Length: 321
Ligand code: AVJ
Image (cartoon, rainbow, N blue to C red):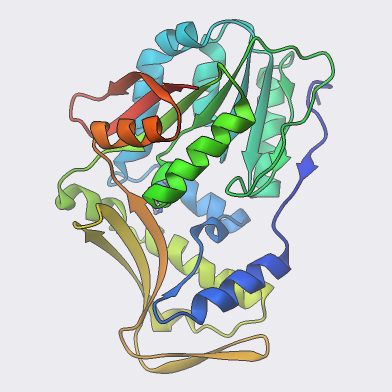
């Protein structure tokens, strides 16, 4: 293994945090679970399968945009940049930027899934043997600090937040995240953000309810995880996956719908479900270019460039702190 791969900074959420979030979420009138808990090892694997689905256009569209414009993005970033990726996953997209960049100084992948983060960091270290890699296992919705790497003097710091993961936040949360990222990355830094665009529901709904049932398995895996980690007894065949387009709020919602009146035990506690009652597991907000630029401006950024595909499905924004 490359000696440029630094030791993991481990801030992975604990089982206790998971338990507290599940108990709080299921005690609400509209039951809900935070989507960040989708990404255990199995959830991360299922998510990668989603990215390959014919109906799921965001990944391949964003990859094509990054491929087409990596040179221009790299030119705007300049030499010796330190890259901080929020929710780094398998690390495919960052390779496109790293290949285009002029002598990148360091790469700091931040991800909630420890195993996944480490495997991706080891792979990347193999392909970029001289690059400093400093992985952080953390929930980036919570504050964290950037590690000081010995011998690294970046000219600039660039945040990378691809995949329209920003769409999982409500608008105030997204604004707050961008403002915090700006403080974390510092003056003169930039942020490269992938943002899914508003479009016809006939494209949106299948992207979150695919024919092969991979998204359904991804959603239900949250219950599998509760059963395993928190001693729950969810009957997996008594909940169904549903994707809804909420036109008023401009978001896809994922739900798990109870097929009947039932009671579920988690540890020592019991939760009642009526037939048709749902657990709301994820929001995926879709923006117009102007909506997103206005939000970034509110968060203290100057929108510097934007790239979109010919069909207007997806956008990649470059913001300057
Ligand atoms: C990567 C979190 C943005 O909302 O499109 C994919 C997650 N959920 N299919 C998205 C997801 C269901 C994805 N994000």
